[in-house]
Image (cartoon, rainbow, N blue to C red; front, side):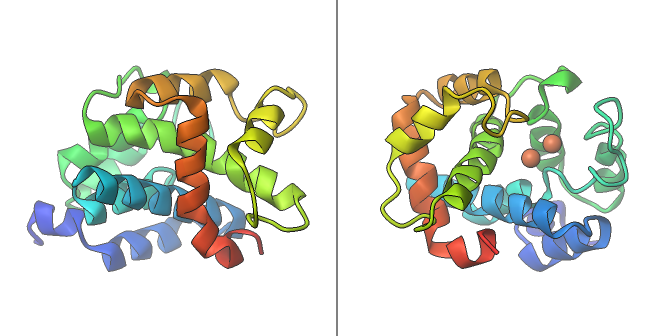
Amino acid sequence: MTDPEALARDRDRALALLEEWVKSPSLRRHCRAVEVAMRAYAVHLGEDADAWGNAGLLHDFDWEIHPTLEQHPADGAPMLREAGWPEVVVRAIQAHAPHTGVVPETNLERYLFACDELSGFVVAVARMRPEGFGGMKPKSVTKKLKTPSFAAGVSREDVAHGCELIGLEPAEHIANVIEALAPISDQLLV
Ligand SMILES: [Fe+2]
Ligand SMILES: [Fe+2]
């Protein structure tokens, strides 16, 4: 069995797991977006970029097989443990979902919570713009956050809570996420 710490950094294994359980291209794109946002923050903070990226890539890996809040991501945790993923990654994935009751505590957990909903939202905003991510400013995202009908599935409360968890103003967090996602816009906006 692979050493859990080495597995935490193994992107090929993370991607294989994602592709095994997630068939929807849009959910795969969402996982990819959260991965790159997490990587960018890890690099910025001097954290383990490979492990942080994998936590982002895998956070919704069980959504298609566990499509209710009772099941996702709680029922995914034993699957990850079984596959040898270390507890730091398993716990971070639980903590991205407030309904699990697992409170984000570590840096990895807090940033994963903060990047999840916002990455989805930023992609939704980019999708509406003819220029995509080109020239995109935090202000256009903030404006849409104040429009409840836009991407109504994204919890504004979770977005705000995520900013608090990482101690950043929303505009700053949004700018960081835009900067992280823009280089892979061709993968995200297909
Ligand atoms: Fe989720
Ligand atoms: Fe997600």
